[in-house]
Amino acid sequence: MSTTPLGRKHFGVFHPVIPRWNDNDQYGHLNNAVYYEYFDSAVNSWLSSECGDVTQLGSLGIVAETSCRYLSSASFPDPLEVGLALKRLGRSSVTYQLAVFPTGGELPHVLGHFVHVYVDPSSRRPTAVPDPVAAAVAALPRINVGTPEPAER
Image 1 (tube, one colour):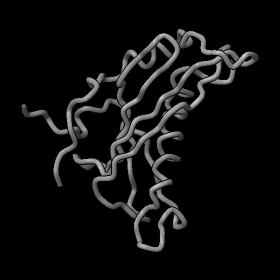
Image 2 (cartoon, helix red, strand yellow):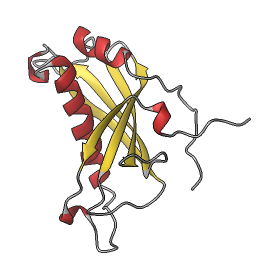
Image 3 (cartoon, one colour):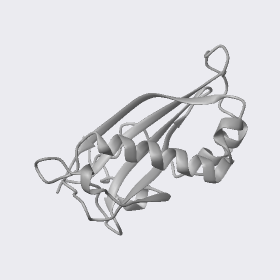
Image 4 (cartoon, rainbow, N blue to C red):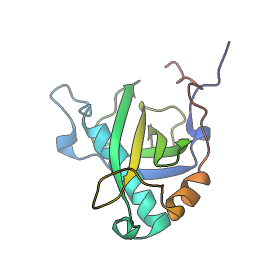
């Protein structure tokens, strides 16, 4: 069974990232942990642009899970873009598919996912995804769980 490789065409929103000098590690490429910061910044910047002040939505989006699959190296000072797509919209959670691309590039350096679970600010119990968030993420391109696989480099 063949699948189409995940590439730029699968993502509908791109968040620009300019790596910092200290994002590189001693091996001369971006430190693995830095990609998680890029994911968090991309998702929350996009949500803020689509939904306004996310702290005023009545519930909090808590990061419950993230992952990252490393495909090729990137390093300072090369500009990057984080692509966003929707993997799953649940009752109380949103799973984003993310990829970090060289600016304008077709194949990602990394692929990841990022799960927000929405909770009541007082009880910290799961609550429904706020309507503005649900509407915004529903407009993202959807990537089916389990497919497609990343392109070979």
